[in-house]
Image (cartoon, rainbow, N blue to C red):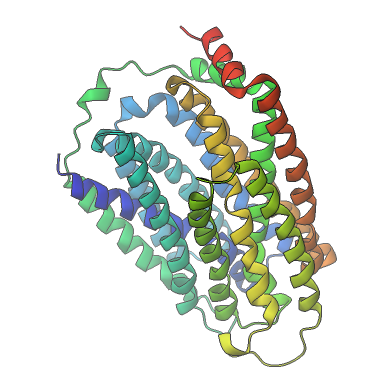
Length: 423
């Protein structure tokens, strides 16, 4: 196989979807400006994205080998290309909902297929881990690029302008190029074609057996609460910058990139620190510091005056300080996922991954909806002070998870569960 072309294809796939998936905060701000949508109504866009990711991920986990990894990715790219072209042609809130539903469903196909394809194009565990990390880093590059790409098409002088929708022609072009590259790249899937795909009932049974294990219940609740907090902040940061800090729309979107950048840096640094420190104490320290950062940054937002902000140089300090919370909360999600997955036999990684995707998606939707309603009813500062609640819950859940590990041993508990469900 022509591995470099396959790897380039996978990277471009992730790049496109990083921009689309993480544009929800920008689009929430824009649909309020363009279509007169309330904050609480705009918050449902997160649900259209996340719930389709959860639902389709669950279904595709069983049948991906029957569809074929390459074919699944091509279908996904085709869907998002058409959805992107539709956005500027038929502007409206319903079209935006359709776009995020299509993006969520397509990303589910992409994520399952990419993760499976990596195993086909890497020779050993070290190469697999190396490419996976590079892939996730490229995803963050896509997130950062998206903020600047969208802001380039925003008209600050006319907030009601729909000119920003032109960005979707660019995204459709990138998706089409990725489609053609993948179409022309052979991928040998013969090593998995002979495997009998499990039924939906079998997958559901495996997930239920894992989910009712106490330590897994604590884990999925931890993942749910973390994503609730992260997505609530990420999705509403552009709106916070615009409506509370009084930044121009394009600058509000650009400065939200600080959160993505600090998250990427936080995960890189955590990868280094976790070689020497206990994951538990690192995460506890990060959460306590994150709570302090919230208490420091948000009072600054109340002191923003009527000074006209034209660029990064004269933006208020709160716009720089609050997004640094990404640096502190970034290590939590990968650390807890690693802790649970490394305790499982390989054949149980699929059901566990399904639980991770489902509860993460539900957490993301819940976080955006709650933040949107609080933002509309009590204001943006109160909405972001709300992040202290999940921070407190995470302190308790991580402590409970660690104690359960120490008392019974996650590995023995989970492997016992796995043997009960073995065929």
